Image 1: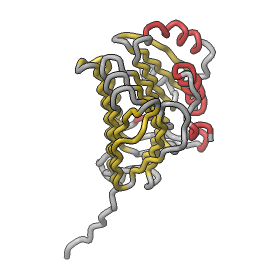
Image 2: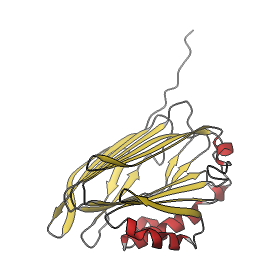
Image 3: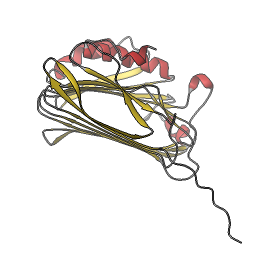
Length: 273
């Protein structure tokens, strides 16, 4: 007798967004969206285009896949964020939820990649890769926050798997490479002092711009009063800030303050809802 199999529906979604500059404002040049991935454009003032990513599935689990590709034409600007925290739920098998982010910035373009935090539930599996190609004088401000469970709900990511990689290139040369890989008893691993020392929230901020090195001293001064444990460094024309905290709200507050300072503009509206 053949054993019945249960096939689970998989979430798939993709977005291609090309942004161009016309006169004093940036606008949508190409937009293609499919599956569970959607993008909306709140009315914004000034030269920059504001775009909000939406996952209509409400979260991702093992075997799901999201692909986002964003290209900025010369001197165009976009602030890209997400409507809510991305939730990575428990995987029922060894397949990971796969997220691929690709950004390409031509001369003079400016990208603010400011998604809300990624929440990892117990037994979640995530494979995420972010690739950025910059022209010589383009600029990027990016934030990534990982929450290993929701502390306010008494949740914890005890086991699971995560692979999270960043690759940033300027004029074809690699200027930033970062890879995080955790597998198995993640909660026990995060207790180690060389990792998070018991913290359950981790954040990365990248500021790539001609004035990045000049902003290091003030960045460190601002971190003196931070709620989280944080540090800043600079090399290859970029400023990097890493921070860890017991709870996500403290880390997000610190990152939000740095984003507003570095960008000299308000946070995305969805961050303030």
